[in-house]
Image (cartoon, rainbow over all chains, first blue to last red; front, side, top):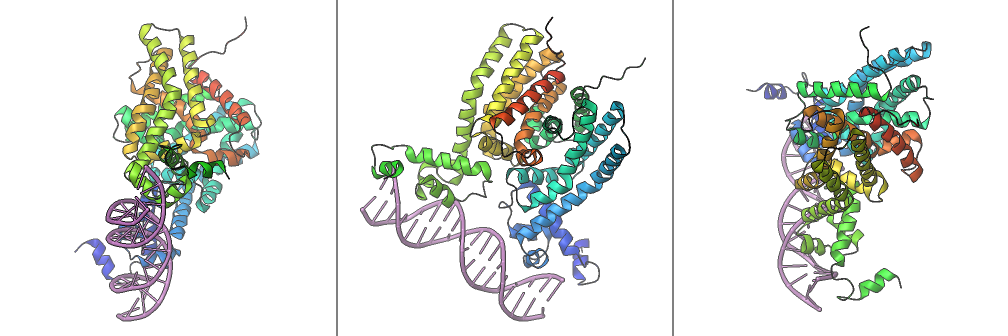
Length: 231
Length: 231
DNA sequence: GTCTATAGTCGGATAGAC
DNA sequence: GTCTATCCGACTATAGAC
């Protein structure tokens, strides 16, 4: 008797909100790889091991489930990013750090982005949905924009402004930040191209390490930070 | 009487392969914005102003039409990129240019990429399909990989190798080229994020100019080329 | 070659038993 | 709360008239 069927045998006690969780989980997997229209409610419920009608019952429909997935992503990425973002914002409000300190913070944020886009096991699914939402935005875009993308960009703009002596609100600053972020995003959206070109099978930790090292160097160059040298 | 209906009135003479063209055109528009499953053959034929059965007749089905779109993109981007790529490759085969000359060629290729991803009216549709194909590759991916992506990356790797003194085939070189390209790709895949953050309505020529200027500066910095100065 | 009509399938949502 | 059975609309593809 499998553990799953053992638990499924008990009606109320063990799994009160289990169906919700299972559905969101399955939906994250499927919507991460396929488009909204490319996933059927039948596949969804089947993969979640729940009944077809459960989607209606818990989320009001396929669309509601999709929004729940967006909120899930927001919360997962948020739990990684928000502490770091809050710390940086508070620091910048309190004082004016040196260029070196600012650069250090940029590196911290880059680390967070590498984690959320390349290293976390679910990252592929997250970014799949993030990218799709940018190409054909749905109501879910607002959740992700307000919760994840905008705060990260805002924080990086403040730091970049300080480092380069630019107004954080200036168009140039914001564009520079996008270009900076693009270097990382590339390795996600062009995953197939990258792995095929390099003969990789995916992003294992050694491959992520190679990417990380080069991105750090690049960010240093783009922000005009000289290499540290031992005196 | 509109020109369209005037032409449609004549059966054979004016438009022998017109239906094909109209279908590919409509398909490019629709597949550029929506996923494969998100576009119905009804919408397709309706938007093309042809009959539903024409998709079967000319392309053997929805999938065949999609592949025709991929070949169309390959040919359109190819006509912009291949002459430049061939010239660079031939040049590199014939002699070993200086770093400055190599950098000049990189700039030329960057120009081509900006044209194909931001400036050409159809670019939004092209890149939409390119990105989708990377996230869930279909048989169309091979067409686009062999025809467009791989040659561009290969050419940039040779140049980057020469400029930075690296083996063009080395993993590091290839990763650096991806990072380089990512800066540009960002402005396409995150179009919604970029325009919303900057309060733009789209990429008009003045906005593309701002992006181009910064990208050129960045590429210079990433390749370690010093600013030219008047003596 | 072009179109209409339709077959056959699969989609999301619902009603109602338990 | 959970499940089965079912509705009904939309889909791709095809047959056959013109």
